[in-house]
Image (cartoon, rainbow, N blue to C red; front, side, top):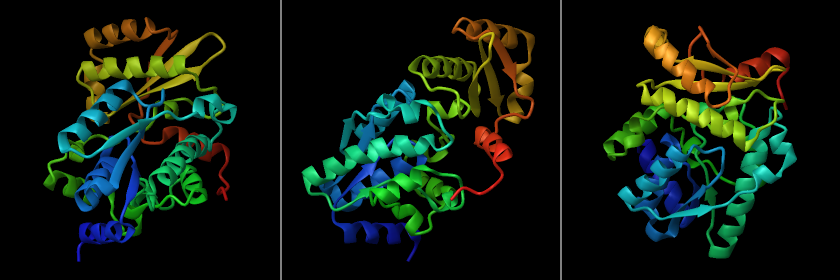
Length: 277
């Protein structure tokens, strides 16, 4: 029995579910498999949060419409929580806690047996404070339970015709702000617009990290190493610098180490090398 069949069997045993959905590689795959397995006994649930780029929000809705799985959009309250806004290194815990509070209520209201989310086998051992919130609310990670990896999910997604099969890995906009620097809607808007400019210029693996200095805000661009030469071409560099400065940044810099997934987590580990319990 392959892992997809194992996942389908697990879903059948549950009988009904809500799927925490964002339109990314993992949650899109889980939402579609749940729908094809359980039909109207499954429901994808997406939080409309300032930390989700508007382009991603629209694409996630379009994907649910294209593949026919039902989607409910909810409002979460993490931006009313100072513990989230203060941006501690377990910020994701407060975000997921706010999400799972809402999904728990919705599941009880609809008589659904389980809430699911998109943690996968690759995430084991990674720093994922959101997993603690999932544990507290008894939210299950069925893809992790059957051992599905990111590469396997991409293969299955491709076979199912999901455009997310080749989608770059995404993270919420708040992840672009260093731990300890306050999260604000204004900062997230600046980051989103700066990254949209880079994509419009044809760049793919990108992050714009937002740093607050005493003089003003600094945008630190991380970009895939194969695209570094393109970005430093004078015409592109000058256009990009002017456009990003117009968003309210005093400085625009390029990180010569290129795009690094979780680079702000690396900074956390350097300052606190002891494992977190």
